[in-house]
Length: 115
Length: 142
Image (cartoon, rainbow over the protein chains, first blue to last red):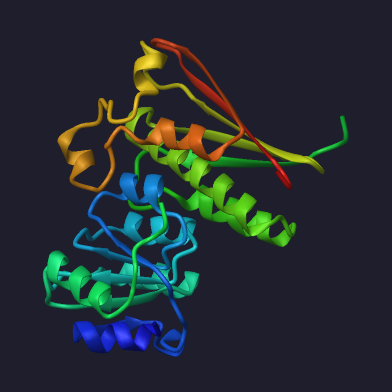
């Protein structure tokens, strides 16, 4: 699934990384607990989260993720957007809650990871 | 033993926002050295967890990284409170982190287990009241 399709499905705003919307991603995960993301994630390229602090972007960066989606109308700080730009990570923000956002992507073919 | 490339990183214990900076630098450096992506990811995550731990628990510390032809060794040294029961600390889900740390998305008791999970060898040398040294090794092309 292209990141642009994620944007469309979630009716999300693009906060940075417009030029990367064409990238293909194959799996996603949703969590507010970065420790768990670091523990269980393998090849997911997309992180959905309601947590807002700079460690969300750092975690995505360490996991080689390419896109972070903030749910529940959360907005990252300018500093976070700056870190994401430097790291080549697309930031999206949508109003949907975590459950609905994950479900929407899943039913449209974006899977979780193979455990 | 072949010669190693050595790198030193200081971890600022005062600032949660900037935590992870050393891991970012390490990751960039490993990429420049052309290590396999999977090896880079494992080392980066282990270093990042260690860095977060040093910020949360120990008021910062330092990391020394040695890159050999066949392996990378990360040594994390802090002068924090030490770990009273290492075996207990290694259990998934056990954490002494505060609620404020949890609200930041950490403190799930996964840090040390993750560091072990992503590295080939890990040893913890800790003295209560003096500090903790963690040594992690990842072999290249394994």
